[in-house]
Length: 515
Image (cartoon, one colour):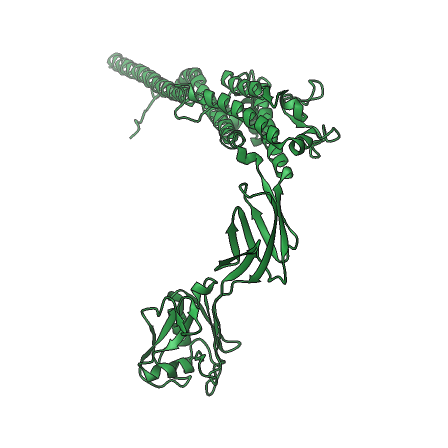
């Protein structure tokens, strides 16, 4: 509970205001600690945001470009894409192949006879008794697996438990049983038929619903449901599940669905063919070009941001605002003021310079490949001249002939030419370059005790320690200000007590003379 102070009763002074004025001077001195803490917190946020972007580039683009898989992209051209499509992996063999599609995969499908009842329309709430089944409870058997037309049996036999049937059962209860057993089941009121199918295609997923031969009521229940395919009058239709079959270069392959994975090719059959269609697999030079292009796009974007932060305008004279200062400003003014400070937090930052410099040096590397000394300029990749570059974009790389880059779109496309004429040499160069870059960046994030964990590019531990110390300083100063406030109130209270005592003495003396 806060202390209640009664002040100024004898002196007539506004002691609360006087104490506030005295304490305010100490609070003003302490603001520098709060502002320093705020700037450290903002700097942590700025570095964390940048650090995440550097880590992403390091772990994705810089890492992936070190491996040959980034330069061995393959594509397969299909002579008739209405019949098949192909996804090509990097280990597929270049060359031409023939493909014939003999069969497409089918799902097992049981279509029931149209159901009718006396005096109304059949719905999912209709019972078997209303459909004419008035007998004792019985069971139906579900056969599953590859169907043998000769023996009329299924490879996996009959499922247990069997489907339980009673005259009080509603059609929706029957379809629910089938759904729980792993089938698609539905009663369509518009056609008055049960529709049942396997969830997956292929011969191994074929099924049938049959009567239990040991119970005469079972066949009656099957007929009442309109699912008796052996009874011509019952009128049910069964389509058996089948595997897809293709011939690749004359060799036959089967699949329970229409997709085949063969020697690096993922072939999806779409239609049966009358003869062969051709598949031509080759290196995808466009994909390799795009991989390299995307690498430099990400590198340049990151480098531009680091240069912008490092070369930011000074925010001298700007400090984080106190609550009182904010009260005197509009939200827009506050936002602009704080942005000025936040934009400059990494200006001239030595750790930022270390990362950017290491990346720039790595990109200037040259390598001996096939008896030739090669650098990025060998592929038409370069930075622009100092006066041609926009501010904070002087370390960005441009690719000659890149149609998406207005600065170099009209130049000779040397990168595409190198990929086409010497794909192995091109891959070797960029693997070496990416390895050089990756190694340089990895060295930075591995050699400091100021990082809380591997994978950081700034001294987050050091910044956090600074923040903690500043927070302690703020708390310490707040305690000091509170003590000063208490001291002043005690002094004014003592003064009031002394004046009260003096007033009492004066009144006593006055009374003596008056007597």
